[in-house]
Image 1 (cartoon, chains in turn purple, blue):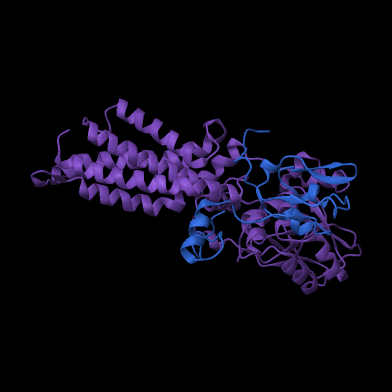
Image 2 (cartoon, each protein chain N blue to C red):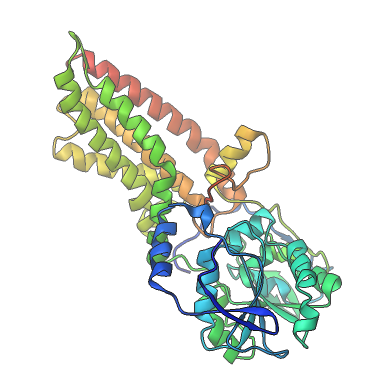
Length: 342
Length: 99
């Protein structure tokens, strides 16, 4: 649990927090993005104060994931406000709302637990819009008497939202997915499937030594390192290139986008003769690279902000069998190519 | 539009105009501006932009909206199949988060 943001002061018995990021906060943000020790980044749920709030100050509801909490407290710098942190098990608002931890039930529980009606005179709580996936405004009102006002999607728009009298513009209500948003998510995407990449690399490194005369350490070294490099390119293409270029890669299905980028990457490698000199081996690599990039691009549906469950299920019905057939025939062809000189 | 549109004609979102009281909650909570207002009643303007998050259904006081909500996540769907549950977000098990 993090406590470094506490100033040590209390406002009517509520702990006051700082809205300024320290260098550690910036450093931890980078670490979180790379999935390093992510679950340690939770905040003690409950009520906090920024500035010197009183009974008329606004109440902002947020999740207890440090990155989320940090963005909210930075956004409300200079404001006198209350911050009600729900117990979302260290997960951001949108995902927690989807999982049911950022919920009507938890919001009701925290409002009762901190006795919010004694802290503020008004009966309004500002909930981030994406929390609406888990919170029901009318049910919260029935349970607690508090009106849920949905704030902007992004914490950075809070000052403007407040200035406009708690009104969000149409733009503040929409989830964007800019190239910068996508690039920020690439490291996590890479870290998630890293262990499978390392496993595949080791298998190919070992199998690379096979040839018609038996096994050659020398071959394992030369062909093996080349295999490792090819796998790395396919992996980066699926986890990084497809997400970065998402709107510009043709096709709506992520698996097809990935197949295309995987093959383009393969053709570039083939041009530089990195896929070997034999037709069989080149074909094997194109099958393998296409299937890896296709699969990894397809998993980016989970990170993207606009894919529906029905859509992903429809896409997977054809994509997964295609990927399995391509990957297995690719590996078999590659092994055969070790013994035949075509 | 910013060019990010997913598959066409797959979304399960339905709105019952008979029940709608025009409170605009669906317009407020929708992250993809799927809804609009016509004659003081909500209408679905851009169905293919819906990501089935379920926020509108949850916040409609008249129960006028139905959608099969869930995670539009390939890893989550695979996970659900492996565990024999609904598609779930806990892709890497306890101790990590996926989104």
